[in-house]
Length: 85
Image (tube, helix red, strand yellow):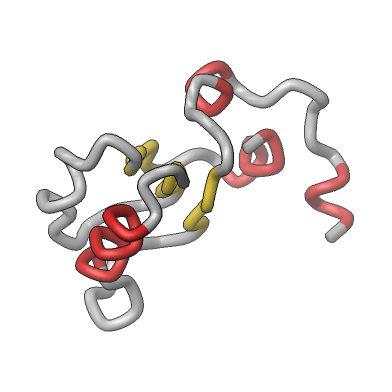
């Protein structure tokens, strides 16, 4: 948890413009067994007032998520910048 205490007081602009509340998926989305885009699609439709932020390497098929207005695929960020999000 110490790692996240180093977060700057202001997150990056690309994150600030995403409406709250936000549900952040942090980590590699590279294994279709461990990351289910269909589940994220289902949740985003069931919770349209929640912004779903995907932060990490993406190599599974997320094409079904790209047109959902409350899903934001930011992709990979360096380990050092993660606390800012």
